[in-house]
Image 1: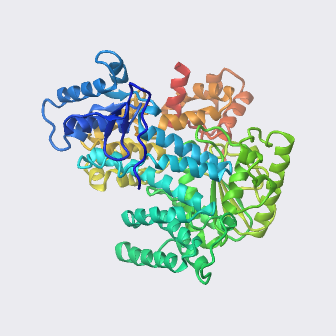
Image 2: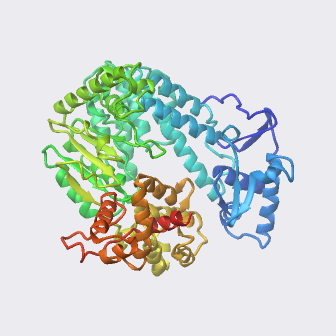
Image 3: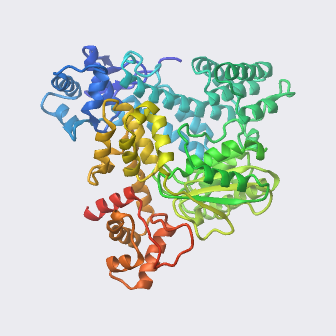
Length: 626
C-alpha cells in the first residue's frame, strides 16, 4: 500500500498518527516522542480519544506484569510530556489532557488525529453508498484508506494493551477496505482492487469477506480460473485449520461462478441475488436464546410468506439473534439474505426513500428512483415520502419495483432497528415468498398480521456463558459468586454483560468481586459499563429518546417502584397520582414501547407484577434528577 501524503493540522498544531507507527508531526516535521514507556502512554490515550482512560489501563499498558511502586508517579511524568506536545506547559496542553474520575482524558480534534479523520471519512462513504452514490462512496472510502500506512501501532505491539487497541484499529481498516473493494466492483472497476485484496488475504487468510471480494474482483476481471482457485485454497485452509467447510454464502458464490468462462458479471445487476457473497455478519459472542432462536427458525423456515417482529429494549440482543437466524437459514432462501438498518448512526429514523434506495442497490432492483439524480441518490429524501413531487414519484417507482422484485424471489430481508410502523409500511412483501424479519425496541402493535417474539433478559446461565466467553472460563470459575452478581447487576441485558466482559478482559488485574461492587452501586453502574467506544448509557439514551415526553415522566416515576423487584397496578396508580384507568393506559403505553415488561401468561391487570429493566431504571433516575 502506498504511503499517503502527510496530512497536517493547521500551522502550530501537532498531528498524530496511529495508522502505522506512532508519529507526531508539527508543520510537516516529525517530533521526537521520547522513550518507549512514554510512547506507550501516549498511544493508549490517543487510541481512546476524548474518552476517560483509567490509570489502571495505562499502568497495564506500560507494566503488564509487575508495575513498580512508583508507577503512578512515572505515569504523571509521561502524561506531562504528552501535555507539552499538545501545547505550552501550563496552558493549552493542561487543558487538553485532563485528570479526573481515576484516569486521564485527552481532548483532540478530528484534524489532529488520523483515526478520527479515518472514522469520519468512512462514515461519509457509507452514507454515500446508502444514498446510492457509489462513485462518491468509493472516493471517500479510498480517501480514508489513504491514511492507512501499515499495521496500526506496529512499533508498540509488544505491549498487550496497545496490541489489543491496535487490533481493533486494524479490524476497522479491513472493514473499510472491504467496503471500498465491493463498491469498486459494483461500479464495474474490479481491477483496481485485485492486487490490494490479494495482499490482505495473504495477511488475513481466514477473513471470508476479503476472500469473497477477491474472488469477485478476479471473476469480473475475466480471470475465472484464478477466482475458482481462490475458493479451492480457502476450502482446503478451512478444513486443515478449523475442520470446517466454507460458509453457505461462499459456496453459493463459487457455484455462481462455475461454467461462466471469462464472462464478467455486470456490476449492478449482479446484486439481484441479494449479495450472497456478503450475508449479514454473525456476532462471535452470540450466546443463549435457544428457545427464541428455535422459534425464529421454525417460523421463517416453514416456506410460507411471513413477517416476524423481534422486540426488546436497547441492548437486548435483537440484531444478534436476527443475524444468527439469517446465517442459519441460508439454504431456505436461495435468492439470498440482506440486512438494512432503518436508523442512522445517531439513532434518527431514515426516510423510506433512503431505505428503498439501499434495498434497491443491494438487490439490483431497477427503478426510476435508482438514478443518480433522484431523492435517494441526491440526498433529498428528508421527508418520509421523499420530498418534492418529483422525488415522491421516484420513490413510488422504486417502491413498485421493490414489490415486483419480492414477488419474483425467495429471499430473507432483515429490517434492523425499526423505530415505528410507518418506517416499514410499503416495504413488506404483498405477494411472493420473501420473508421479512424486523427488529425493534417497541412492539410495533400497528403491524398485522405478524409473528411476534419478545426478548426477555438473559437467564443467569446464559449471561454467565456470555461473560465467560469474554473473560475466560478459568477466571469465571475462580469466583462464580461475583460473576453471578455482575450479570445480575447488568439486569441480564446482553449488551451490558458484553461490555462488562470486554472491560474485564482489559482490566485483567481487577477482581470480579470488586467490579461487582461497582455495578451494585446505583450511582456508578452506568459509568462502569463503558468499554472503548461501547457505552451502555449511550444505547439506553437512544431508546429514551424514542419515548414520548409523557412516557418519560411516567417511567421516571415507576423506576423507583421497580427497585425492589417490580410494581403492581395499585402502586403505579399511587405513584402517578391518577385514576386506575389512566394508570393502566400509562403502563401499557410503556409496555408497547418496550420500556416495561409484563408477565408472559394471561393475568389480570391488578394481579400482574410489572418490571422496569434495572439499567433503564437507573438512567430514568439520572434524567429525573438532571
